[in-house]
Image 1 (cartoon, chains in turn green, orange):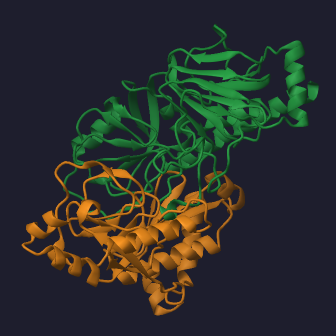
Image 2: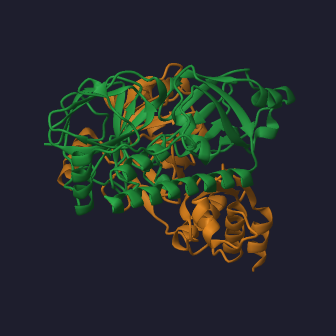
Image 3: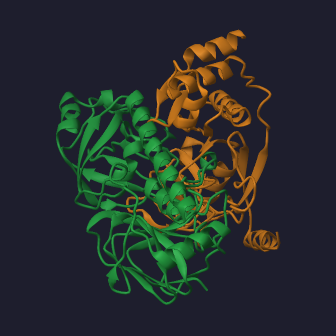
Length: 329
Length: 248
């Protein structure tokens, strides 16, 4: 036995970097909403970046450890406590058998990620361990975690055993500086590139899209965020056939309130696409709670790619840093 | 490059879908010939991927191509952005695309138990058009349908070819749950629900076949380009199909 769910909280699921290559069959990509936090969580415990972790939403999740292990918590600050004491985020933590991890409430951000050294024992379905809730496949029994669920953890490799010993004996006092990578404030400047149908917006709507705040409504989940601000309208109805959509696509349904598509989006959509959130900012978006405020800022496609490259460079630096710490240990 | 390929290239419209994908539109509207082009391009991309290619997703008249911008950057000439590189690649592909020989012709019979508890809206559809229930079944099962694309849910086919005589508006209040295998009508469309889901389609029957198999290498029963025909079956036949599928 490894970990036991005492309380699943709002929504706790197993996620990795998503199920790719099957969209042509109508199978959604899914995966972590904040993939940078997922990758960092894995790197901190010596896993490969794409290993499956738990994605915890907002509050309430309580997990008991049934053996000694090394974990890391990243993502939003959901006020995690370990046996009642504040749990440190963004660094590996050694957990004693019998301890309980509890996420009290979201102070900053919306989703936290828990990685387990060695990974969780979850089978791979169509190339991924992510939970695809609607098709009831992947993750743990294809569903959100429930009270009483027990998930096995994989055996530790040599490097991870050494890491465990190191932390167990001397503790550690360093952590990853995530600030340039992931923002968890509830008012965010989100960068977008214009979508194909942006030019079909009325002049007033075009101006409002970039100059007025939008609020994330309570209708916001892993599939998409409905946002509210000035009601946007097109100059004329656009006749559209279904075509591909992606993580970050902002669609405008006839209601006038945009929808931002998230990790569990459908594979195709038929609403006009007014914008796309750039990949580098998707993690900030993933950390927004209902009622959060978004300001959209336009960047070019080239800038979007440069920003993504910059972020990958930061990830590479963190990887090198972690490797150096390991060799010292 | 043949005249046909030249025309195809001249008509192709490229547009970015965010910073990690692009859509190439190769035709206007819904037509079996456009479906063939779309399928041919999508399959060619799958079989001849560039470095950084993730996947291609065919739709009615367009293909979406997903890529890793960073991997593309590392391998593309320095003067090209990832988007430009992928556009160039796709243009090259279109120049040599063989549309006719790429697609296998498959015709698949979909057994359907029409009406009763499995098709609660069949009578409504009949009344709506002043037809008998038998006539609706006859019209629905006499046509050959083309699978244009899969989307919405795993294995959900977007079909073309329904006779407009039985086109029926969606339900005003969607059902909270439609059973897996349900066959429905929504406006001029007809389709099959591969999974249990909420939905507003008029449900006229159910197939005992399963459309989604996550453990198989080809996870869906239907593929774009397949032709299908609905075949009316009895309760006994329905039960027999179910038993057979449990043994598989």
